[in-house]
Length: 192
Picture 1: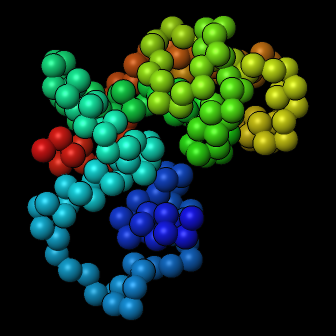
Picture 2: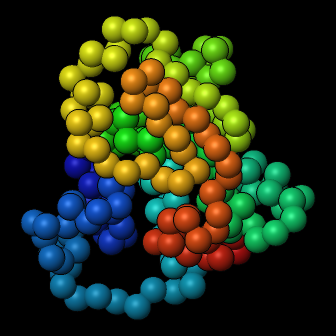
């Protein structure tokens, strides 16, 4: 877990997307952390790819297969990559503000706590289509302390997700627009 946080800090990238992780340290890890060096083009591409993998929990082979699939589609590969990443089941649970982190959403999906259109799905990387409804499998999960705490914060959801707080259902309305996507990742470097 410590290595994970060091990687995140070395990349200067916040997984929570609010920069709360960087409040304690101001320099990168290591003895000579204050001395920054210039990165090669290959190093910059690797850093952007690592950010994408850390943020959305992509594995190397998954990312490679996804690029092979996206090359056949029209449009910008980088934007399409982020749209597919935002359409993952675990990411939609996180974006709906039911849980605090993507890892928590991933674990809840892995443990069969969610239904997709009334069917059991326990694959966090499952690509959800617009119009789909994600709901909690068991009514007892509605009394979960973590979920209740997140619902009480009244954080606004994104315009392409609709959260019904009484029924605790998430409706995926449409694919996100390119301007609604995370701009911290330079997808042009990843696509190269």
